Image 1 (cartoon, rainbow over the protein chains, first blue to last red):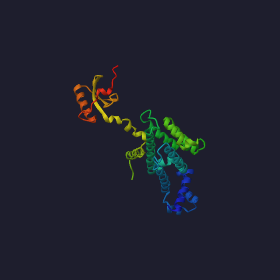
Image 2: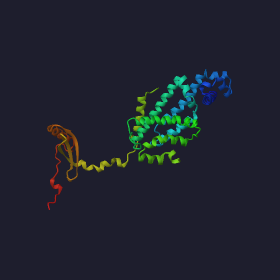
Image 3: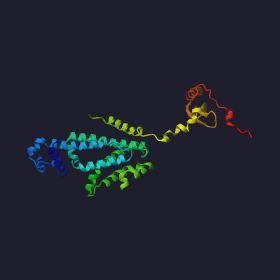
Image 4: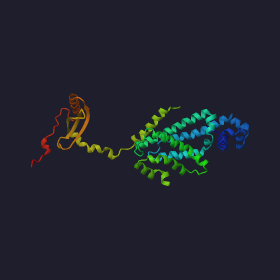
Length: 206
Length: 115
């Protein structure tokens, strides 16, 4: 992507976060980037094309996170995933403010994002399964508990930052990791607790 | 290329399995080789018992030199004694080191003290 295009993308991302996709005009993006609307139109034929590019970057970064599956053979892998997702959401915070706009007006983006969501939930579920096989997680008390746990973890990953923001509370990586780990800790076996306390970086810091 | 949920799930399962396959073995995993080495020289004896309305087929693995060292395993149950006996015969032949049954237990090996 050319330098100007990348600059436009960054400005658009910032404005989408601050004002919402629906409220941002091309003129505004052009002004903020310091170029004419004509120049902007040369790079992006309309706002939809710009929105697509902004989300393409989001998907690209998310794909990198997906490719990190089981890079570490123990509970640190969960910690690494949560940390990567924290940085992802703080970097792409515009996404949170525009969930409903995308839901209503951009069906293709919505479909792609939904595919990524399903993959990450499946990855969390498989990580749980793997750690159960290693003997660090208890067997599930009821059939399907771990599937629901994976979904709950995903909801927390997605919604913890905006929830803190709405309550006027601070968002730090440590608080974020603790909020998500709290869902998993009750299912750890004694061996799992030992591993969590001695190996997982976020547990060692707290 | 887009992949479906099932295919993606299979890939993740495979990656999970790799974590176990690629792990170097530990000494404890192979202890059964030395701990159960004595089973190599055992005579296999058929053992049919009655219980709970069935004939239970069991095999007893007895060390040929030390008969007090033995292991009993109940394999399966039949409602008919003849079936149980036939099954036990073939199971013994499958399990025994010497299929013709030449490996026997010598009662003298029990070394009873009659005092």
